Length: 240
Ligand SMILES: NC(=O)c1ccc[n+]([C@@H]2O[C@H](COP(=O)([O-])OP(=O)(O)OC[C@H]3O[C@@H](n4cnc5c(N)ncnc54)[C@H](OP(=O)(O)O)[C@@H]3O)[C@@H](O)[C@H]2O)c1
Image (cartoon, rainbow, N blue to C red; front, side, top):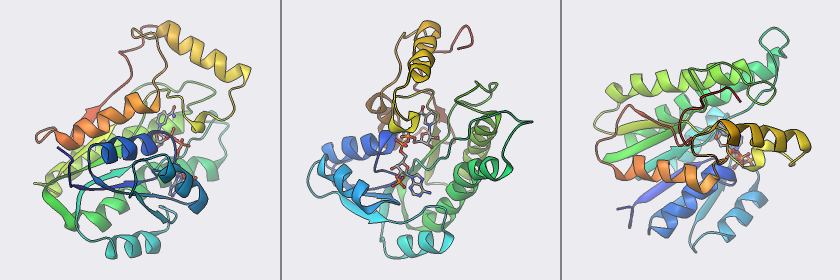
């Protein structure tokens, strides 16, 4: 259903965003990916079907976001995987880094929607990225600020669904996913993944391709709207 559609993936040069772009391109979509690093974009596009366009800019730079969408033309589906992860506690946080979580997750994604929504097809959609929300922080990898940022994206999507109709908008909320975001696979990261597997009904750590399928489903479904998709393998029964 994405054959011939124009799909833009903001933050699409790595991890989940790169897999969303690849799967959309494999379905015949005309795909544009963005990110800050032009070389990272080039190497990501080289691993996708031919023809994926790359544009480098920082998604938190309001002027660059406006410039990008002004030159972009009509869009069928817009995906944002913009995010920033801060590790640490509420009381012991570094305020600048904590603010960065909300800047990326909430403000940047809201501004992307503001800048782009008028050029999205009436039967098109927007898919934003949240993460583990409505739950307590899981130290050390997901701080309370990340939970707050992710929860804010859910509220944003429910509010925007009324404002941008008939364009649909949804949020995908990944849980722990094995992407470059986790950094080098140290013993601590291995332990984190093992704890996740022990507590997950699906008994596996999601891979970016697994999570990307939820974005594709949100785009292809004509009716999922104002909703959240959680490709997490089921609720964790004991806290990992
Ligand atoms: N992996 C997980 O366990 C997990 C769990 C919950 C939620 N999430 C969320 O899923 C989303 C994607 O994460 P991921 O794991 O796929 O991360 P990733 O592999 O590190 O990829 C992040 C992507 O975002 C781009 N990016 C980062 N900051 C940007 C900015 N300011 N402007 C433009 N592009 C930017 C990066 O490219 P450049 O660095 O070149 O800009 C890269 O393409 C994030 O919102 C993250 O919070 C991930």
